[in-house]
Image 1 (cartoon, chains in turn brown, green):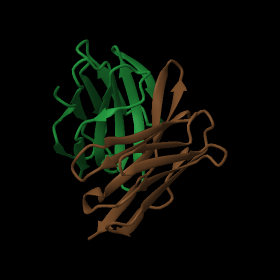
Image 2: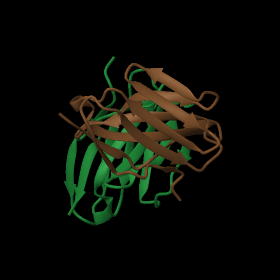
Image 3: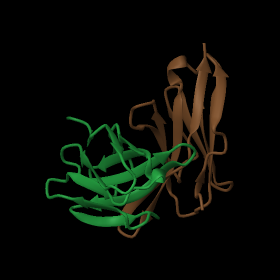
Image 4: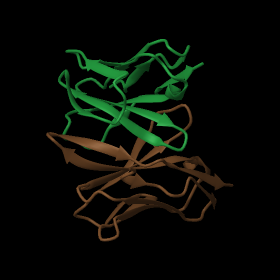
Amino acid sequence: DQQVKQNSPSLSVQEGRISILNCDYTNSMFDYFLWYKKYPAEGPTFLISISSIKDKNEDGRFTVFLNKSAKHLSLHIVPSQPGDSAVYFCAASALRGSARQLTFGSGTQLTVLP
Amino acid sequence: KAGVTQTPRYLIKTRGQQVTLSCSPISGHRSVSWYQQTPGQGLQFLFEYFSETQRNKGNFPGRFSGRQFSNSRSEMNVSTLELGDSALYLCASREIDLYTEAFFGQGTRLTVV
């Protein structure tokens, strides 16, 4: 049972355009959401996060939107650059017992074409 | 500060063998989590340790186990390896287990032949 879903395994975008990566979740206990970026042969690195009390968080070229009623979040990258080409993982956090646990989606491979 | 260090980086084992992977968290971080990454499956949560105690466990068979030492370093062990255990195993550390942002190591690529 996948509680966090990234339905697009891959996405190609032209350099300078907007990249939109989507993520859906099913567990209403999730109250914090994160995006990680992963290059080949490296571990995932934290990109941006959003609390469930907000609907938008912006950091430079990266903006995350949260629609709680639809249980949907998205990551917008504007403008997209070739160096953004990587696998992007959506993650959701919930308090489980006395500790927080991260649940990851399956990832979306973003390719930014020059 | 040094980042999360995982050893070894690459490992080839034969089916039926057992393997131990090591993770040294960021200095001062007491929470260590392990994940398995396979193509199309994303990062599957294995378990989390905090102050030498397992706090959470994912849906993996008992062949997968782990432990954490008093210096927060962690090891995970897989016994009776199967071909399907071939994956990238990632370790992540957090300062305390109530924080959400986790810092990942580069992973150990395990190939079972």
